Image (cartoon, rainbow, N blue to C red; front, side):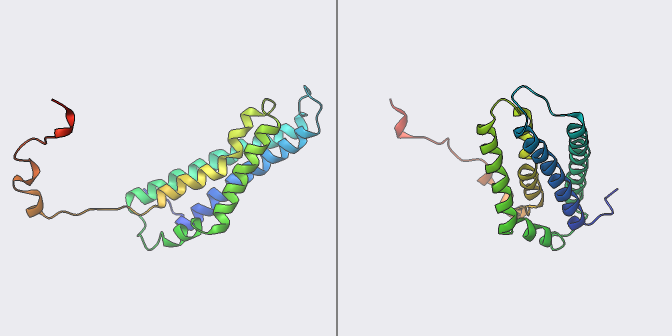
Length: 167
């Protein structure tokens, strides 16, 4: 059974869910900058952010799974996947991914211990874009004719020898 959603719809679904994770993490990070050392974020800030993160991560992983399943099953032609491939190759998408990664690294060095567990969540969008790009990458196939595969070419007549391995 394949997804009724088209690849572009799944791509938007995944992108929006990952952006929601990034925004929630950034909201918690900004709030943490205003907290004295050792004081925790209030539940009124933390609870909605953690809820958005959990729901959005689940939705994003579901979207990625549906996209991978559709591509692997051959539900969509290569031409049908061309638009999502071009969108992911757009410079704005790559710049956004790099900018979030740089922000994550800078934040990690500014607060190395305080929010270490959220460092990976900053990287959620760039990593998701990378996984989707790998999923949508066109498969390279090498076709051999039966005449090329038959015969003695499969087994060399003599073992490979080298004069460089000493005496």
